[in-house]
Image (cartoon, rainbow, N blue to C red):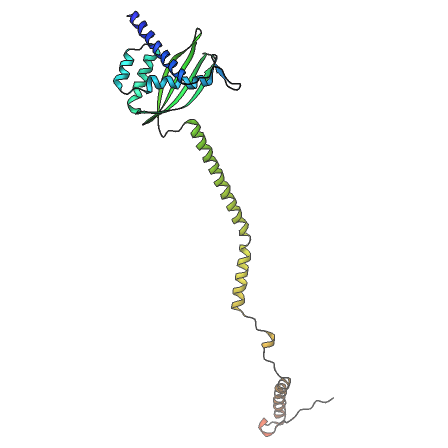
Length: 260
């Protein structure tokens, strides 16, 4: 039984090696890192970003049926068998493979492990595959492969941060606009009392119109003097009638002269 497992493991390793070799012959892989590119286990970051998605596509994403995955799972050992088991758990809900997405690297210095996180788009969902790479002796090997499914509408962390930033800017802009509008209203309030004063003055003027002095009828001086003399004549006539013991019908006062 142990011999059979060793043979199967050797066959699987040769298969993956062959797949990687074929891919490398079709794609020009970087042999050395550029001046500003990080290296992991002696290989540039671009090496993993090209190699790992290719391995995932040729090993897992290309599967057309659950029976095919089940067969591969039964004939695999170690981490690859666990990887097939994890992929079968999400296979039926993914749909057909569309394309590979972004690839990010995260190095754990204490464990001396490199996590290669690959995103892929399927018809019904997105898949995040995490491949843990480690050095065994002088060769780079894969320690484990795990899969996590998420909805097509589910945004990544970067997308969520971008939307959060946009929402923050919109919110702050709205607040500033409202504050400016309120300040403008407060500025206009100082004109309200003046408007009410003008309206009250106009209403008062309409209720009590002023009569111009020039419009008042002038009383002639002669008429005023005549009125005064008539009153004086009546008083004098009454006094004379009282002193004579008679009435004012017996005499008429025709003129009055003042002594100087």
